[in-house]
Length: 136
Length: 136
Length: 136
Image (cartoon, helix red, strand yellow):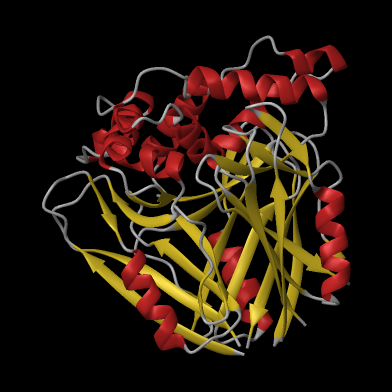
């Protein structure tokens, strides 16, 4: 069994942003030299998520607007601690914070339109994603 | 370490449908000849999901109605591309598009009521799910 | 490849409850004697979930209130079977019922604020979570 671990760092310019990381993940998988395996991609900060969907600007706009509708910024009990980002915790929960990508014949085994995004909901500061490949 | 990969194809009759795939997954796990491992089940098209829940017709009706309430069909920015399925992308996001099933003693290690469903939100055409078993 | 499986049992006092299981998972990972691997944590009953987020009482209150807003208790088709917990099935779906935690250098590789919770939505009875470690 081989294991290969890398960490991706993000400091987004906007507070909320979708960053396409598919190419970076493909490079990590190539470096891992694993023919068959799994690639776990997990946001380590609790106000960010990982999303697998379409690289289409309209849809990316739709999903961020929809998340704002279902988990709006506003007044939350969490803010009594001095924080103002409770909605970001909820948005992470809706999108889910991780994915497991299959590796087949040494490459990411994605569908024709599947692209992997880092979804930031409370950015403008350094945050981390763990990428761990296991396989053979 | 052993790896075993299969692809399931679906062409649902209805645009939205829940298809119970538990038995098919059990057969794949048996064919994989893995005693201890993980079975990743991931929808490769970005308007479908994988759901682990109850084989009960009332609940299946409830969940589809509830998804329609939270992620309704309607007018979205994505539709400027000529598509009409933005809601299906959002429903996939809510349900999540994949699960990792534990394999113990050579079989799926599911709870008493856990059944695995392919959740289609934009069907009537050929779509694919990857099933990858890793273990020993 | 090493595999190590344990089951956690929960009987919560309240119907809805968040139980921090991070320490118990760390102990299981230590017992598994795996340096690099994955730890799958999956709720085996279909009215419970696993949540990775912040150990902060205000936020925990917020998330439960928010789930009640998006997936309220009420009248559902599922209740014609005699059940009264359809909302718990929906809440499990929103939160997702499982996570895969990375193991690096023999320990859970979590972000600075990541804590793992068992999320019960229909408790006061015995329910189970499977924890399976694979790695080397």
